[in-house]
Image (cartoon, rainbow, N blue to C red; front, side):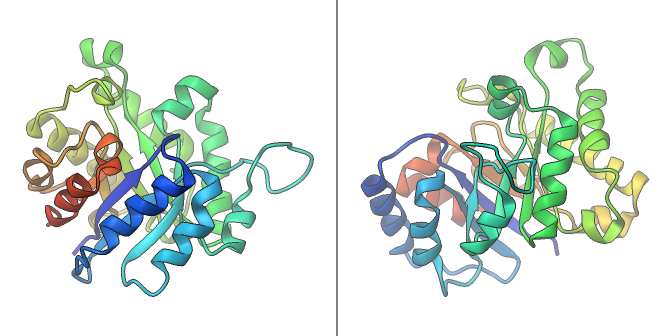
Length: 253
């Protein structure tokens, strides 16, 4: 069975002390996970070591960065490399979030380099893809997402692509209060899995987790996760509330 993942994306929120308190509140619930279930906390860079320490020894709980550089090392002031993340035992990294694409002009080729570096250092990329409202309104969302996948991921070998998690995030449903219907979410997730099967194989497509990342909340998580091709969520605002994120974890298949 594919991994089912509840991934928290704290974005640029919380002080260090608030982050500690939130993590402690979630972990004290002692939610036991099945072998195919995982919980990932994508926290701001200054909190990564704290999160890694608190998660150490907890089965299927992982710390994640929200981004990394597309360069291996060098004179890139302010950047953080995949090697640096590896050196502090970070196992996951979110790549290509729509906010990174929109506000920081990240493009598909740079994301390809980031994914390569993550895999080189045994870091699991959580690769984000998804369309803005203007693309959805003209019915071009499938081709748009296909181009993102082809230009950033489809140069990888079959063994490499199996190490990647994909997160579909309809940009029009992030932070807007709008959520794709379960039918819309399932339709795009199934399309992504079809693309993976066409490029690689059905077995590989059936192994890769595809998360939904558009305003997942405690109240809609169970319905979204019940879709056959939705393998959990990349959660923004609701991950900042302990009770809500615990409910989302418990909603995993």
